[in-house]
Length: 382
Image 1 (spheres, rainbow, N blue to C red):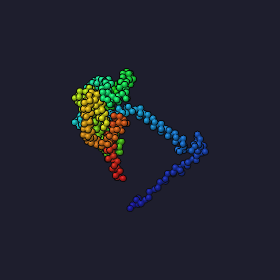
Image 2 (image 1 turned 180 degrees about the vertical axis):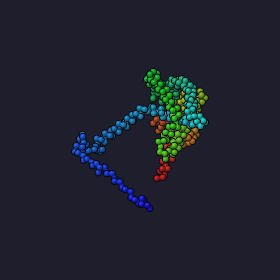
Image 3 (image 1 turned 135 degrees about the vertical axis):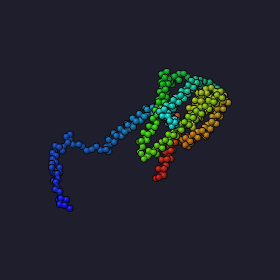
Image 4 (image 1 turned 120 degrees about the horizontal axis):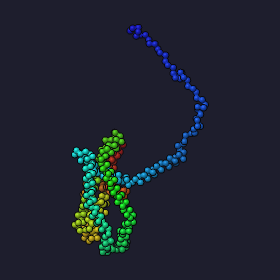
């Protein structure tokens, strides 16, 4: 070891601290006193006035939200219908997309096919439906007169004065007052056209942005649970689409069967009766019965034999639909028990009409899937 290595380094004087370099000046009396007076004690959060004021603000905000939702109910229903249709048509779009067609082109093809089918249905059904429905309404008193040949029915008609009530209900003045005159009828027509166009545009938009909406929604889910939520959601959407397609096919089958039956029996208004049965058949469980009652009454007015044939046909057809066709659709696509389907359809129809009845069963299927895959396993682990 050399002398240079053992020589200690000279120490440098440390800089004086801030407190030593510059002592703090003591505050004066004028600086301690607030400029605008001494503040009072903080407001007591348990003060009754403060609690009541905050509660009133919460009630007002809740009421404002309720009023906003109520005022926008019609638009929200249109959005819901468009989303329901988009979910039902998305499997077709995905299948065409897998054939090598861009998603935008697949959406355009499905939308064009849907518009063609809708236009063809309108051209084929609306003119005879309007004509025959008008004739049916005008001939209701005649049907009641023909029904009065039966002693029991005649007694009911005379007891409750059904003939006069029917004639007054379908009179021109009553219809005019109901529609509010020409302006009311025009408003109803334009409102219906606007609703249909809105649903069509929203459906096309939802189909085009379906994958982006799904990905954007899944990104809000924590990464640790994203895969599971994605799989469950895809399964729910598949069930909804399968149910909608199955319900429409069952309704079309019921309408075609009714149309063939009415043509064979030679009854009037085949198109009108077939459309009525098809639309009512969209209501699960109870819709087919309502349509059967309408057609059977028309057949009974034509002749007793026709009425009995209609009643027997719909009795057999409902057994076939309820125990063969409908259960297969529910088990293969939605996997909902019969009891759950009946309860869901009744509650949905009571709350939201036909739309509620249509959406009730897929929602029950989604709840059952979440309960089976999420709730029950979590309960077993506790």
